[in-house]
Image (cartoon, rainbow, N blue to C red; front, side):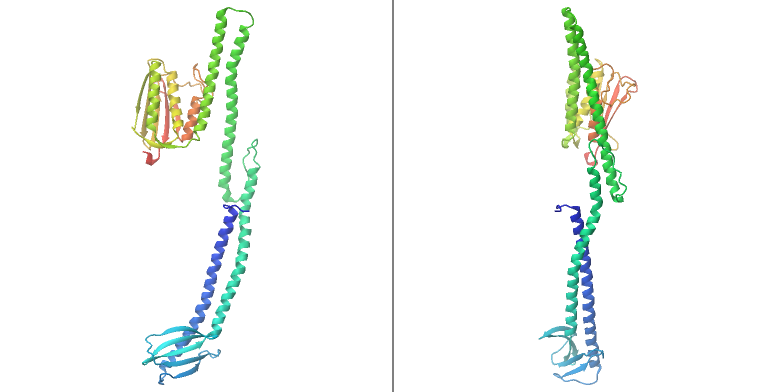
Length: 430
């Protein structure tokens, strides 16, 4: 059974309707040609006979009836002429059925009355009925042929789609090779390119996941190995109380490092979930203001200065708030982590030309390590600060999901770094 939205059904329906409409138009034109040709000739014949009678010098009396031979000697046409008493003001024609015969009348003005010229058109009328029946019969068989043709032709059109679907079914999870089907029609090439692009992105994502899990295993393995080694060395022989305490402190430090990695992995999970949340129409300046106030408290606690200047006062856009918050929080967390006490962290936002919304975090920390090849790659850490090195990686993913971009660079005076997030706004969101 074909589904309601079957392509073959749509093709069959469209082709059938088109051909039926074409046959109907030709049938109407064909019948109209015969109809107007026959009746046009009849009307012309009657008008010529009427003209002859009017030009004849003979005077006819009211009530007089006589018969004349038609103009065409090849046809046995007898015209009945009746002189009428009633006043005829203008010429007109009339068709009349009498018993089993059909007559066509022409009425024309004559003196104080009129003339009626009648012609038996029974044969012509029967011929038109025969033509009409023939057209209906031909159309009936044409409908059957049209339906069969439409079904066959739709199957031909569907064949490339079926073949393409078979190629897609051959793709396995373990073998995401790009499709190369040169036999597909030219019109399918954009679809083929789009699917190959999707396959390539899936392959890149799977490769990233593989590398990511290897990195996780490596990051967790190191603190576990340190804790295990410390414990084994401590238990080799009986030691003083202080050594045991120091070993426990080292193990707690290793556990804290693993907890930091696990926390970052949870953040990654939350971010992937946030990418599927529905965008809402919200005032992002309110979100930025709440984040800024929270970090102002944290900065004060760590004896660091925090100032912010957010413009415009209100900006309503469609966005996923969780992803935006993750980006700004990551910038501020890094700035807070690397900025010494009594130094300043600044948060700014504004709308640039070309309708671009920009958020900037400027700190007075150690800046970006020039030895890092890709600061956005997972597990890249600068300096000896704690953390799993996934912060900027998560921020970049969140920015990509929002359709924006982030950048990180050193200040011109080399006394800190500048983290920037930019988002292109729609015209109605200005």
